[in-house]
Length: 286
Ligand SMILES: [Zn+2]
Image (cartoon, rainbow, N blue to C red; front, side):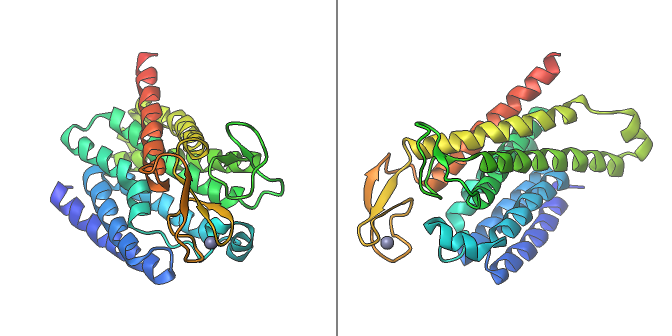
């Protein structure tokens, strides 16, 4: 399939999904625009296996956001007022994947597929951990000091949350491996695909699993240390937002001002990409 055709199909598919997500309340208007851009780039330059992996992330995250929604709203301030993702969040989650897809169009190296797996595994692991970890019975603990923290605190982790990370990261790895194999079957033939296993594809699995886990732990580490954290004087609560969900402008408490939650997600997905790439290099060496 030529790039142009792939881009057009990607645009149509992403627009459809973006519109549905906006209509269902998973994305804001700008978030839907961001999803269309990211989807078109990943589908157009990475191919449909990459594009469908992005969709797997998107669909499972949206479903998990709606899972036990009212319980989560009561548990943690982070989940108040629904969970509509905006442009910043769309770019933070899919930006690294889209950049890697552009590089892949220039130079289709399997190393970049491994980096893509690590990046997407990280954002999926992080989303699953956030959406499911919040439902854990025991309070989470700060990744730095191990002290118990309030549910939804940046940088706090829990065992159920980490298990959700592992599941989220593996899901991306498994989806990408199966889809790449299917792509091979469609492009060549079932016989060819069976007789020519690509060793690099299998390395995507540990790369996605470990990359996603390390990436999402890095996310928590930044959240507990240098991420900008604010304080709402009205509710007397910590928050990641410059304007609290109650409407009050918050005051910065700690962290670097430029390092907001979206930047943390983006940087963590780059770390996941790096780990994925390292696994690829290791798999080529053995
Ligand atoms: Zn407030």
